[in-house]
Image (cartoon, rainbow, N blue to C red; front, side, top):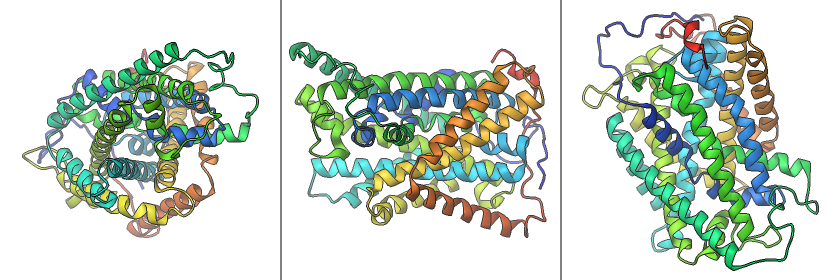
Length: 469
């Protein structure tokens, strides 16, 4: 199995992806795909798993993800194409491992829209109980797919509007929390420190489990790299946008979870753990129950759109180099300049999965199982990218063999491995099953790995492009 590097700037016989995105567009896309309301759907589960240490779990997860974000950014400067982890790992560690990383990313990007639709449909059903949850799933899935099928510029404009809306509600929520704390003074000296450290409920295993789930807060920042071929300046802007997205989401997430725990202390149980954040918001200011719930539906719809954009382009990259059938997955619509076949296929798969997932989740909720599986796929790809960064910058000396060339990818790999191990047995079983299915397909396609798996049409790496990162 070999990769062949060609010049991406050469004239192609068919339509290609259109460069239309600035650094601002990439950051907005990253913030949307991760979502400024990312901790809200999982807030109750984080508090429950971590025995009240939700704010701590989100904080640890931020620092855990930063090394991986740096590795992604540096690798994106070497390979500014749409393949992302699939390309990075494929070039540095070999085509088979690259395929495994890409297969893990597909799992991540397919499942994230599913859990978005599951949560949003449940919340919408609370507002409009006459409409069943499954019908809300259909409405959200069809709407998201219709937006994704438009050109990349149109999707970017939609993302900008949704980013402004959700950011405004987050600021409103934080303002209401501040007002509540001022008007409800307490004599409890530990109120403000308990979300980070509560000696009465401190448990390392519980916090590790909560942190593994809290990583869901940051899932999606890597999707920025899949838009490299549609960025004006991918070598410069993709690395910056990746790290900036992680930091912006991290600060906003910590503030939201911390504020919610101050309003609703961990000593009190939630009426419904799945929508715990809306109860905390309601306590801060009554109208926020509806405002936050509705905004989360919009935010999750936006996240699903961004994820479907990412996976459609990942499938395009894998189809373009014959890892998947080129005729279907490697095709670009001449009018909209998007991989329309992939967009429609992803929409159908996500719709079916969002309806079926709650039925196979067992003792877990569909959202909880789906979230853990998203993290399984993401962490698999993250470990691959960190390993690829270590090989590229440390072993091959692309960055001059600075201390950070060892420390950053090694730290990122170890952290991802620990979080992966703490996902839970059910998630690990389902995740390993997905990876086995992918390897079985690769084994069949390559006749027992005796034939080449892929010919990757990407530019040769340029060591100079990483200077200063």
